[in-house]
Length: 276
Length: 104
Image (cartoon, one colour):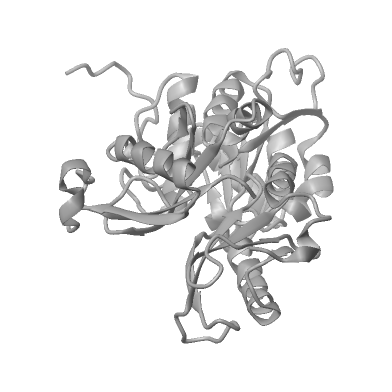
């Protein structure tokens, strides 16, 4: 790339680093085959793109495609003519999307919360722990969380609900109807991809009745993963956290083994350990 | 890329020449998706990975050549590639890597 107008700009890699660290959506298009191999275009929604792939027409077409790929978090190769023509293969462009990390909101500052927050961090989530009780919702108890919020779950959801999408998760671990029901009804008002709710079979049945009384319909109840997690026989907070995160992964990939707890009956916890 | 940034900053501060290798395409079974990245500096230090550990050694050799020559290249590893038999992916997949100097 030899365009003279790029000399006054921040180098592309520097701009890319800033965006990645700020966790704002950005994508990098690189010519990997064809004229100007190595040329780059850095694209962010709502901002002027930086760099060039060779011609203005190619930049314009690729920019449009990049924004589409970024919105769905995909990375891959696309082919174009030298001026961005479709169905031509003169130029191969690798589009790499850097979508912001998905969010996980965990309601309830309980024993299971710390373990779930830890596993979620390993999986790359931005984790928020929220509980209305200030003595439990502290950064000392949840140092691994990105945010610890002392508030009612429904109020937090009123604030951040619009930012939740398909890749995000809400985990309701309070198993207290006073907190659960408003948290769930507000989570159902968002586009969040996963809503998991903790509780025994008995708690689940009672809560389902309360949710119906609160106006939640069958479609709403069907969106809930309740009781939360896959039927792994998880016992400890850490095992339970794995079972929850495994359910989130399986939901995303469309796989179903082992069965979700919501599709099985009987005790959630093993009453004794099975060692081979 | 995200996980490489701190090391890349450190290398850049020291003025090290660096090559970046990114998975750009994957056919069949493979552990890492497009975007998986590793970086190699002129001293042969490595961060990141592009497979399950199967081809990283060969990528280091390619990356050092890219640092030396300053030229970008595309490299393919897989069972079907005769040249890659020695360092192919045991999973049977094929990965395409794009290597370039980190000078942009």
